Length: 83
Image 1 (cartoon, rainbow, N blue to C red):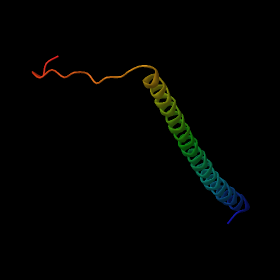
Image 2: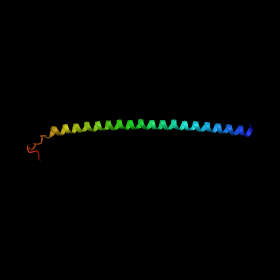
Image 3: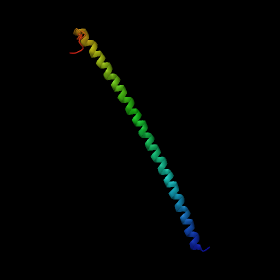
Image 4: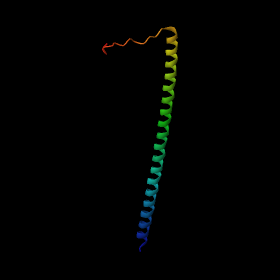
């Protein structure tokens, strides 16, 4: 085998190895990026639920306050079923 053929073969093997390593590295990086996105989504969802619970609590407190100040009566239902 000539020297030029050996150099070409070595360069092809090295190039292939670098490409394979690069692809694997890229896949690992993308996988980690996607995982971080899931973690951020979970955190946003938890924050949204916490905010909704706070809003509900404030709403219940307002309702309690309004019911103490105002009289609340149940609507009279129409015996015929129409309003």
